[in-house]
Image (cartoon, rainbow, N blue to C red; front, top):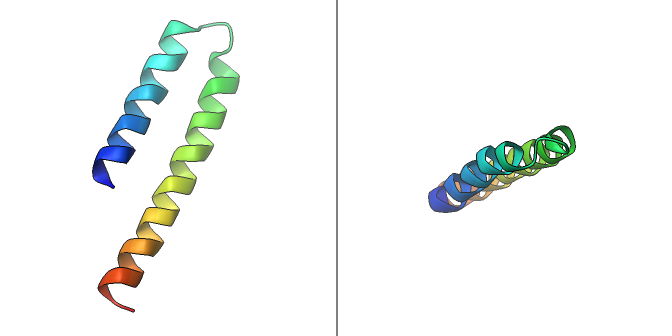
Length: 51
C-alpha cells in the first residue's frame, strides 16, 4: 500500500509540471484522490491490525 501512495504522489507531482494550463484541476483531483486513499488505507490497516 505504501508503494501505491508513492506512485500517486509521483504522478501528482509530475502531472501539474507537464500540464501547466490544467494544473489547478489536475492538482485538485489528485489531492482529493490522495486524501481518499490515505483514509481508506488507514481504515484498512487499523481494521486488519486491531479488529
